[in-house]
Length: 123
Image 1 (cartoon, rainbow, N blue to C red):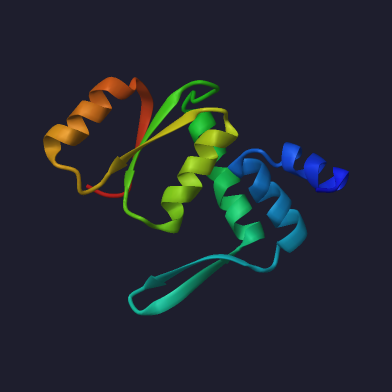
Image 2 (image 1 turned 90 degrees about the vertical axis):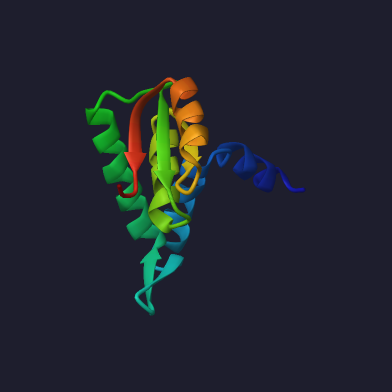
């Protein structure tokens, strides 16, 4: 492994850092795709970076900061992962909860997570 690769690996040691690097290097290229009502939706690395940034700022305005837990309830969709990165960008800890978990399982996780806020996909 070259020194340049090793240094790059050390700087890109979190998902938010990797997102920033990919937005800078591959900004206009597709980062994520999702099929909605039979039609593929696509987001570039630059668009994902902006979505994550805006969501992180929203979490920050709610008082979320380093070490805080953020409960995240949702299905396997791009915005679920953007929420993880937004929390991690603030050095908060995402606490994922399966949206289809039975009530007792979800209640157990949420009661023990000490989450400052919860982000939920839908009802």
